[in-house]
Image 1: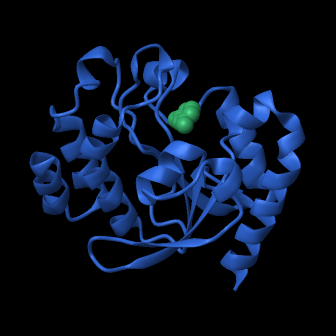
Image 2: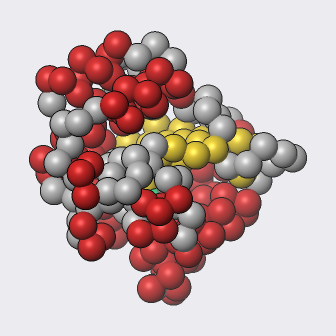
Length: 202
Ligand code: URA
């Protein structure tokens, strides 16, 4: 973790941070992954999303949220006028709590999350978003160790204080992969998106 912290702190822009993550060999998931999956979307966007970890498709392609969950995520973003693509819609930036696929898509361990965290924190600092959405338990508990499960933590704003002293409002909501399995919960995720839109417009 000390090595991750030093490498993250040394990066002064997103491009050099990406290079530092690519070059980092301290995460035990890396040897089993095909790609290092860092981010997608528009750096510096006021809206940042944080997911869990790359899955099979993301590992293959090297970008976050390219599978079915990603398609739903893109529709969720479009519903509030945002997109990770350059164009008419307002910009969004996407990353994950973990940059390498855990074998068989198992949940990442606390240790794996802790190793990646200095880089996640630096991505947040360098992007300086106005708001962050955490998708599901893993990224929510990455930012807030004491957060209850997502069913209880979703929909309630919390402040994340970065190591560098910035304070960024965070709204946890359901992970799109969960919404694909439990479509009845989309109603609650929709309410969260409305909250996000309001905060972005304020
Ligand atoms: N699920 C995630 O949490 N992140 C991805 O990048 C893809 C699926």
